[in-house]
Image (cartoon, rainbow, N blue to C red; front, top):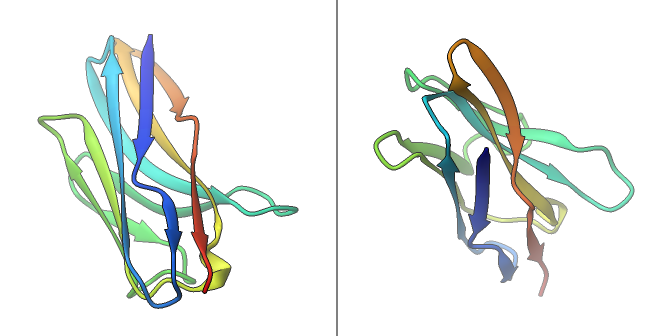
Length: 120
């Protein structure tokens, strides 16, 4: 019904920057919230940043001041701008969206993940 496709991951040196993108498509009536999660090897998946339809955002303490989440409601896209990257940011990053697919049904959808590796 709804597909999320991430792009923009890759290998970057410490202190570098990357921008992740996520495009939502399918039977979308509206999107309530979008966010980015990450999962490092041997660790649980954690919330990195989230943004609701009104524009309010929240961030994990570990990324505050370095990462910025933004959203293009017209295009059903969400972005994660990552600056001052650290080796501990290395993980698979997943896009997530809370989507109203057929009112009032709300679905929780995930992308396939994109690898971010921070290493010299």
